[in-house]
Structure formats: C-alpha cells, structure tokens
Amino acid sequence: MIPITDLLGQYNEIKDEIARAVDKVLREGKYILGPEVVELEERIASSCAARYGVGVASGTDALVLSVVAAGIGEGDEVITTPFTFIATIEAVIRAGAKPVFADIDPKTYNMDPASIESKITSRTKALMPVHLYGLPCDMPAIMGIAKKHDLKVIEDCAQSFGAAIDGKVTGSFGDFGCFSFFPAKNLGCYGDGGMIVTNDGGYAEKIKLLRMHGFSADYDYRLHGFNSRLDTLQAAIVNVKMNHIDEWIEKRIQNAAGYAEGLKEVKEVEVPFIPDGYRHSMNYYALRIFPGRETRDGLKKYLTEKGVGNNIYYPLSLHLQPICADMGYKKGDYPVSEKTQDEIISLPMYPELEAEKIEFICGEIKKYFGV
Ligand SMILES: Cc1ncc(COP(=O)(O)O)c(C=O)c1O
Image (cartoon, rainbow, N blue to C red; front, side, top):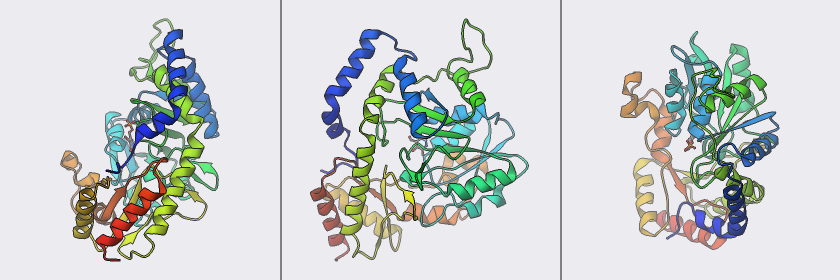
C-alpha cells in the first residue's frame, strides 16, 4: 500500500531534533505563548517578508481572526472560490459575514480573476483567494481588482506554504496571509495550529488580543475575543520542521516532475499546470482525468485495488453542498468548478516518496488507460 501521505517517514528523519525541542518546552514549562511561539512567529513572518506573524490555534482560526480583525461581519460579503475545503467559507460565516463565490480557472483550479468583478456589490469587503493544492492564485490580477474596488485581501495559504510567484511567496501579497499547520500540510505540526502574517501593526495587535479573550494584560478586556493560541509545543515542532522545509518542498517538486515524466504519454491525464515563474509547493498532487467522471471514478477504483492511495479534493463544490442550500445557489452556477470536481483525483505526494513508487503508480495508470 502506498499512502497518499506518509508522516511517519518524516518523523523518523527528525525524531531526535523533535525529542529535544519537546523536552525543552516541557522542562521550561511555558506551555502557553512560550518563547517558541515568538520564535516561530518571527521565522514565518521573515520567510514571508512580512513585519508580523501571529500564531493561532488552527488554519481555520487564522482565517476567522483575520476576517474579524478586518472589521468584517454582519451584512458584509467576502468573495472566494467554491472549489476549496469547507473551512474557507466556514471562517467567513463564523465571523458573521456571507461568502460569495466566483468560479475557478479550468487550468489552475484557482479563483479566476475574470469572474470576480461581476460578484462585487456594495456589501463586498474582501477577497479570499485560496492557493489550492499549493499553486499560487493569480495574485497580481487579484490585488489589482482589490485596489480598484478598495477591498481587503485575505489569502488562504493553508495548502501553500513555500509557494511563490517570481520569488514572492503566498501570504505576502494580501493584507493577511493565513497558514495551517494541520499535520498533512507541507509545514505540519503534530496536532492543530496556524499562523497569520501581516504588514499592518494595527491588525497584528488586534489579532493578538482576539486570540486571547480580547485582553492584553491584567484582565483589561478590550474586545470580545476567542481562545485561539498556538500551543508552545506545536510551535517547537514547527520550528524544527522549518530547518528542513525548503529541502522537503524541493523533493515534492522533484516528485511532481517524476509524475509528469511518467504520465506524459497518457492523453487522458492532465498533470498540474504551472504558469511561468510560479512555484507550486505540491501540497497535493492532483490530476485531471478525461473525458470525465466515469473514467475518473474507474481510475480511482483501480488505483485503490492496486494499493495506491488516492483522494478527491474536492468531490462537491461548496455551492452545491446541502449545508449551503440557504445561500440560494443551484447546479450550473459555477460550471468550471462543477466540471473540475468530476475530473480531479490526487495521488500520493510527500517528500520521502521514492522514485520507484512514482514509477509504479505511473505504470498502473498507464495500464488502466492501455498505454
Ligand atoms: C484550503 C484550506 N483552508 C483552510 C484549512 C483549515 O486549516 P486547519 O485544518 O488548520 O483549520 C484547510 C485545511 O484543513 C484548507 O485546506
């Protein structure tokens, strides 16, 4: 069995470093907002060329706290993609605002800048691009629209740590960059965790208040807040991983090149499209399968039988989810997203994935298509 992701191989590689880092936290006893949290905040901010980093309890909370810090709530709208994980819109809803969808680009699977402007109303307060699978959205175009309409930009970087456009990393374009340290992410911890980066000192201060019940010191409550701190233990673990992350992302990129080479003769398969100058951080490796759903589902069944881990991120666009029925959308509203959900499938992807396994997986896909 080749799993879709394998966290154990990586753990074995860094076991001693992790043990030392965890032991230090346990011995020093600063379990809440200890020095490791501050260290990680500085390291992540610096890797994003941002002034501030604020550790929070999860990637979802990073989005919620950003929306709240931006002053967005009841009656406001945030434009995002229907082709993402539920947490993206959950954050907008939790903050009391309404998510509004813009369709995706058929090649990148990311929110299509061309479909954003028609969704802007007097209630729109922000754009929330999601760098899906690790491919940056077209941020120059998105920032241009935001500027023209005076909108905030909250980047959902949960899947895109280390992704960049011409060397400028995701999270550094908008007003807020929101990262997740969920274990399966490129930079995952051993539990839940997240981080917001921003260049705005006012926002950073507000998020620091929000993550700790709205008070700074001595029970001086300034805001109605949350309990959403990044654990010191998780920060210590991510600090260890930061020492290796560049090398791990490079390995993911090499693995993606291995897949692309191995699958180049299969005309029913489209490998990830990477625009010139873009660095895809390959959190997930998603193929598009032609001519459509039946073939994709058949391949999924075949790969599962052959012991090749796979998954569909995401099988149903958010506007069609029963839980979103009250938003008033219907089938056909976002045709590109709906077509993509039927054609996409993700294959095993992690830095330690051996070349022979990639060869085996490509060989099985070729057999399925009779190549
Ligand atoms: C696109 C996207 N946004 C937000 C999140 C939420 O992150 P977390 O699980 O850390 O809350 C995730 C991942 O889980 C995600 O994939």
